[in-house]
Length: 362
Ligand SMILES: Nc1ncnc2c1ncn2[C@@H]1O[C@H](COP(=O)(O)OP(=O)(O)OP(=O)(O)O)[C@@H](O)[C@H]1O
Image 1 (cartoon, rainbow, N blue to C red):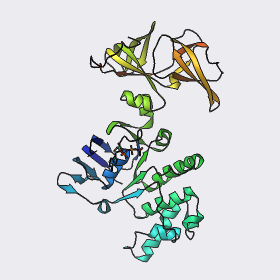
Image 2 (image 1 turned 120 degrees about the vertical axis):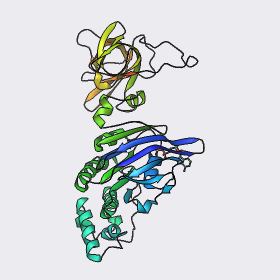
Image 3 (image 1 turned 60 degrees about the horizontal axis):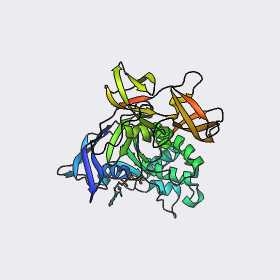
Image 4 (image 1 turned 45 degrees about the vertical axis):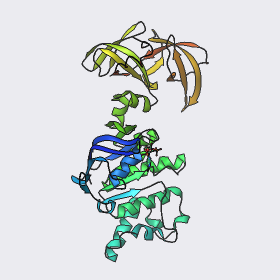
């Protein structure tokens, strides 16, 4: 098992700041997912940890040992880590056992055989040791690639979108497999994905990146319940952020005015400009007094319920709010919405030249 620490890590490709000053700590034994929109720098950060890229500045420590930093660079092969990529990179002419044994040549034959057997049984493929890659499904091939990494007993395994080539059904079962294998091996896993459901389902800790920066590192529940930045609030769980003014804050709750209603919601913002972060689960059709009135502009059937897209009256939101409803509501209907939750974050004042309009809920 190995912890990973980076400090002020930077790498630019020309004018692109792919990794722009990342300081983070991933504890030993974590299942850490790197999540973020395309091009945010996930793969570059993974490649820096692997030693496939050299940082422009900053340092990386693996299991407490500096592997990159001023005047120091340890080659990938000497970092004690395994890598699993989208493409399985298996040797077609070799058996499954041969593929897993590849790279263990320095070990005595008996030890090598024992490691292969153990790695294949960890990934549930002991019965397929004599088969060749073309006789396996995509999911099985990915498990062979993982077994090959595990057999070398690295303290850290780096996985770059390992499920990207699998169909949706297989991805689900592979997520469960990866969780089980992580538990069984006790190895630290770093898993790159742009699919937030995948990251949330699999990881004990998720790092959300945007434009080369680390926005937040937290367990999945915390990213949902207490996003640290508006970007995380919008990116995770289909969130929306409404500009509001916080009136007072006490004991982890923030008082704010929303239209004509005075509300107290969980949050972490001093009095002043703030963002109200809302997810579909925070809104419901009002049974009694409504907090907001809104016009339904679209509905779709998803997971046994309707998802309603609504535009609150008198607001100019770039994207509609979404909520789930057991009942269908025709587009065009005016409905009352009730807030069941939310999260309030400080909002930095825009510079005067970019401030175009007064916040909608000020
Ligand atoms: N070798 C390279 N040369 C030039 N630019 C690069 C190179 N590698 C990455 N970049 C740029 O750096 C930025 C970060 O790329 P990176 O591949 O790390 O993002 P990502 O978050 O993994 O994206 P995706 O989810 O699409 O794979 C992008 O703007 C990309 O175009």
